[in-house]
Length: 218
Image (cartoon, rainbow, N blue to C red; front, side, top):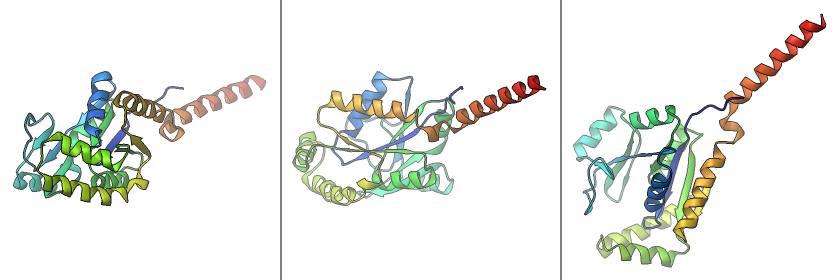
């Protein structure tokens, strides 16, 4: 039985400040041939050190709306006053090539993708506590307090949607967390529902053997 080498579409979401971006970067660094990171398009301004085409594709609002009209996005959503979306072409190419494609997007987009593509695996990343979440947001030092408060308020809404996800990832010790996530993704490739073609291939071979045996009996 030959398992089909098709990638899995993976969505990583979580509270802002939970460390989901760090987890994804570590996965990419340790397993560069296994995973592909889908770069999102966004209308928000670049943060210090961010480069267009690396962290995000930075678009004007008009450019983003054109992508929506052209159906060039797998999904899109508005979050804290800005649009975020996943370009379609790159995702489809990487999955066909057998690489697991990781999308780092917020909860609205994640649930839209799950609805359109039921085989999508959803991971939700959270810190050990709400107090730790606030500490991390403040500690980044990249945003004013009113934005941080907006993100904490948004986290209340996001907490109501966690039940829709497949796995809850508690990011306490980064090293352990990255190993845990990689293990989950590796196991997903063994799930029966992801190997139906290979199973049917095995059944076909067994039926062929049975026919050959019947023929010899005649």
